[in-house]
Length: 454
Image (tube, rainbow, N blue to C red):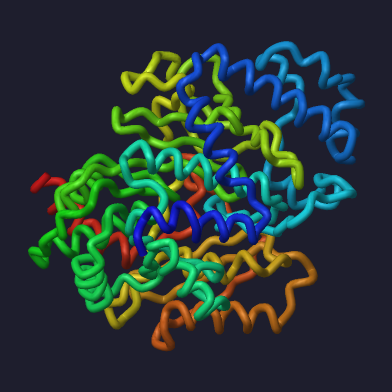
């Protein structure tokens, strides 16, 4: 499909059918990125007051919190005043879900479950305007790299939403917007060889996917002496950190730069990397705080387009640092100096298939009676699910989890589910939701070779 036809016909029709004002927001964002930092901050403050007023008026949880602390939204004079509002976290969302959204919901609200990167999945409500802002901010960032709407795209991804249930309708839609999906849930060598052929034949302008999956694919293609098609302008890496040596391998194999996207399903899109190397915050709809007087600290986010479920001072669990200096690209958008986020692991089957850990995490997160979990794989490739459950956890749910895990990992993998009272964090304090000794051993040798060659 010609990119101009995607931009002027198919994408607008798609967004109109979903009731999303993506294109009007994109028009505004293309202008506001060049505003001064002071003007962007003023825009942020206006939208922050609107969100706080709405939350106080319409959302029971925030009415309770604000009244208890005598917080009046119209008296919020500076971003520092936000510190009076207690932080929101996953436990509060889980336990106060019904009180965290307005009784009169906006139109076209959808439930969205997180991937459980901290071991505690949550479900939030997302309306069409929040979804549209995320898409508009992402398209703007793709435009920075001359890889905008309608350019041929390969997506290395995987979830029940993207990979199943929609069948032929989704396949047609992807073709109409020049997007092709490759599953990150199956990273066996035979499958990655097919991915290399698909990329060479499709000749995409951009690729988008899990950072770890992009690196794994690039490492395989490097060993196979694969030749990049020469059409790629940028690789967008998301969902987890990408280390310097991983970035080098991806850039070397695909012969184009890597651009980082930082976001989370519950918090929203929080930053995109520009060609000058800065992580810019889409401040028109996102306010980022760092819980530290100086230097690095936990990232707290306020999504300014979150009327269906206000996300105010939400603890992401990630560590980051703000950068107050201007960017060489000239945009007035604030910047993150760095983000030390979560890293997704892989699982390995006895047949040699490498499976993205999210393939099993998605199976766990749909079971509401599981409060917390961790997936462990030992050297023998046996997989254990440690689960902290509510009394509602049933035999049927246990069997369903085993069945879905086997669908993802194969029938030859031994799977066990252990109910426990608590799952401790690692000595570093960081919770790893997947620990695979088998994958660590397999990937360590590949990573070592890439570091030395890079």
